[in-house]
Every structure is written in C-alpha cells, then in structure tokens.
Amino acid sequence: MLSTAIDKSEPLPTGKQNGRFYQAVWRWHYYAGLLVVPFMLILLLSGLLMLLSKPPESLFAQSSLQVEENAKPLPASQLLAVVRQHYPDASVKLYIAPHNASSAAQFYLQPAAHHQGGHAGHGAGGEQVFIHPYNGEILASQQPAHSLYNWLKDLHGSLFLGKLGDALIETAAGLGVLMVLSGLYLAWPRTGWRSLSIHWCPASRSQWRQIHKVVGLAVTLPLLFFLLSGLAWTNVWGGMLVQPWGSLPGTSFKGAKSAEQHQSMNHAGMHQVPWAMEQTLMPASAGRLEALDLDQVVAIAAQQGLTTYRVHFPLDDSGVWTISATTMAGDINNPLQERIVHLDKSNAEVLADIRFADYPLMGQAMAASIPFHQGDLGVSNWLLNVLLVCLILLLTISGLILWWKRRPKRRALAAPPQAEPSYSNAAAALMLLVALCFPLSALSLLGIILLDWLVVVRRPALD
Image 1: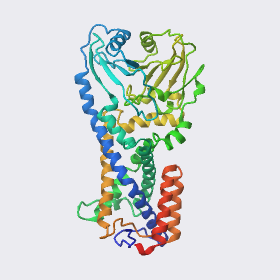
Image 2 (image 1 turned 120 degrees about the vertical axis):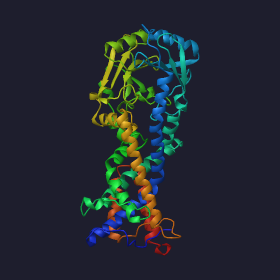
Image 3 (image 1 turned 45 degrees about the vertical axis):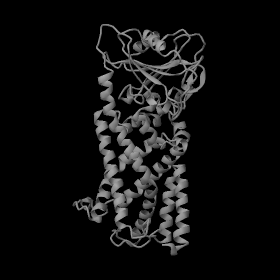
Image 4 (image 1 turned 90 degrees about the vertical axis):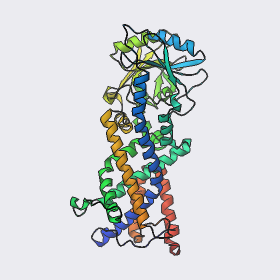
C-alpha cells in the first residue's frame, strides 16, 4: 500500500516553492527507482562478473594457447587445410591471425547449413579452433556462445528472454537516466559542498542518506555514460532510432552492394563488427570467380600495414573477403586505429577501406565508448570499471536501505508524500518530456503517472 505520510526527517530546500517542487521530484525519483533498481542490480552484478571473468580467461589463454616460437610459421592456407580435414562438415567463417610470434592462430567454424549474424549475436553457436601456427597441431577448441562470459552477456543484455528481455532492459535503462537526472537535482548541495561530509554511523538513516547523495554525485557522469552507451545496443532506441542515423552511409563504397549487412559477420558469442557498421550494406564482388585465397588475403593485410587482425571469408557467391582490426573484436585497444578493408574476391580490388575517421560522429563516439564500457582498453580501464561498478552498487544498495528505514509498518511501498497538484504535475510533465527520448521508458512512465493519479489522487483512502 502506498504511503503519503510526510517524512519530517527529509530536509527540503529553503523557500516554499522550491520545497514543494523538490517534494514532487523526490516522489517521481522514487517511482523511477522502484522500477529500475531490480534491473539495475542484475546489470551491475552481471557486469561485475563479466569484468571479473576476463582475467581468468586471459590467464587460461596465456597458459594453454601460447606456443614456442619457431623459425617460420606455416602458411595460413595450410593451417586452413588442417582445420578443414579435422572438421569436414563445417564451414570456415573466420581466420584470426596470431597476435604475436608465440600465440596460436584461430579459426571460427559453423555447421555448413547454418547462417548466423545479427544485431545481438544470438543463435546457434559455432566452434572456435586454436591451431599451432608452426606445426599445424590443433591445440584446443571451444564454443564461444557457451562460455561463461557469453552466458553473463546474455543475462546482461536480455535476461535470457530474447526481445522481451531486451525491451525490459531498455525500459529500465531509460528510466535509469531519469532517475539519475532527478537524483542529481535532489542531491545538489544547495548550502555548499561542505554539507556533503560523511560521519559513518551504520544505524543512522541520515548518514545513509548522505552516503547516497555523495556517491550519487560522484558517479552521475559514469552512470549516465554506462546507461546511454548500453542503450545504443537495444533493439528500439538503439537499433531503430539511433543506429540508423549513426551508421556509415553505404554510398561511400565502390561498386555493387550486397543484400547482406555488416552485422552478418557477427557470430554467436563473437560480436566483432563496430556499431557504426552493423546496419551498413556489405559491398559485393564483381564476379563469382574465386581469384583470392587465404594466403593472398594475409599478404594484402601485411601490405596494408595490419598486424593484429582477422579475416572474414566471403558470405556467399557474390561476397567479399574482409580484413578487420577493431576494438569491438579485441584485435586492438585504440579505436582510432580501427580499420575494415573489403576485397573483391574475383580480382583483389579494394572495394572499401574504412577507418575510424570515416565513421559518423555518433559512430565514432560508440567506437570509443563501447570498449571502455566493457573494460577492454587495458588494465587501467578494467580497474576503473570495477571501481565504478562497486560504487554504483553502493549507491543502489544505499537507496534500498533508505527505503527500508523510512518504510512504515504494513505499508509496502512507502512512497514519498504527494506534492501539491501543480508542482506534482509540473515534475511529472518534465520527467515525461525527458523520457520521450526513450520511447519504451516514456510508455512505462506514462503508465506510472496514470496509476499514481488513479490510486493516489482519486482514491486517497487507500493511503
């Protein structure tokens, strides 16, 4: 049951009008948090586990997939022949060149009849094969789609509910933006920054409120960054609204266009295409004749000055060879060095040479932000993200503790007091105006406004 009893211990800004508007914003901040916090906890815990799973995986790769450097590695085509001999019923989709002289080469295989690609990389998984570059020995294999990291990634992105889960996460993330902005208004130190001092006393509700404010102010910008960069991967706000106008125009390519988009080069458990490229059409080869082999493509990569890269095999008869080095795939750490080169398989012509500078502004922002979001830009980025996630967890938990401490007995929700209608309506309209940037969140907020009006305003006896 909702509670609208006035909380005397909650300090309000000075001035009659400021206090009433503060009270109205506080109520809507609470409502946004009511819906956001369960999802926020899932996102934070899964994100933290994703970060913590990276060092063990890296150590495993270093210990199990390192090879002794020899005089000269085998040609890539010879390694490909070994893989095809061991997996005769599979279709080779990808070759990942060794990152250095003591690391394994890799191939990604899929069942011959299976075709996989897409915005979120869902679907049946293939096999990632690690092979000794000097003697052709198969060192190990794994299914990326079944890894712990990818399991956590599916939880983080869709709650294992597919499009429904994606929509729930998108709704919560949009409301999270509103929660952060309203919280910034509520926590702003109107009497000076010294008012934010903390004297630790676990039993004191006022100190938990102070912790909530101080931590909230400290993580406002990082939390907004995580929410907005994560929203860019959602199906509605990201895939339908933001990504289309943030993608590289396909008209910048020479020659014919394929019916396939760049996201067709994504595979289950291996999301490797930059955000700005996913919805851009692939170029098509001029002819069906296969004039290039893997060795020639590797030689072209060397001529182009690429050292750590991957080679995508043609998708179909009119497909192209693609050499890519991106932060999304983990080939490089510097997004400014991103590069995708498409080769006509019939004559080795370079159909497109796409670099970071060619991305639209939004695409550049995403190319830089997504690796940072994932903690892929080195140890310092990883450590910073772990710290930020822990601070946001503290912010979330302190909010729950505040709710629990102010919760009257037998009143489950303990909502903040209802402000005067004019101030409440103004705060709700402002929140709804901001929420219009996020369609699913706006719909949910509109539902909350209607419910608040029907239950609280029209039926005060329920309080």
